[in-house]
Amino acid sequence: QVQLVESGGELVQAGGSLRLSCAGSGSDFSTSTVAWFRQAPGKEREFVARITWTGGTTNIEDSVKDRFSISRDNAKNLVYLQMHSLKPGDTAVYFCAAGYTTSRYPSDWRYWGQGTQVTVSS
Image (cartoon, rainbow, N blue to C red):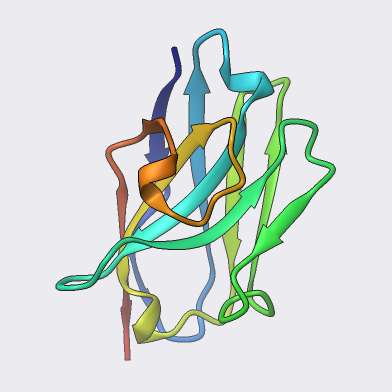
């Protein structure tokens, strides 16, 4: 079992930066791949980034790879999503997910947090 809690979302002006955190617990968290997804109002949940349990492999969605990065600290059971040069189009609820998959499809991920709201004003 894995429990996930996201934090760090807030209202920020365009061009600003945020770091989201995903705190994990449970016996499987430290060996799980962890991903970030986001869901804007009226849109489907979309893949943003993922990181393997060792942190050795990361994958960032092409549309944000020049501005976002993902990292993890297994000693603290935390996974981070660092976001720079934020745009109004980045406004969404950001979710972290954990599992033993590298899929870009939300339905393939077993564990989910409740999400954290990121709002970027123009």
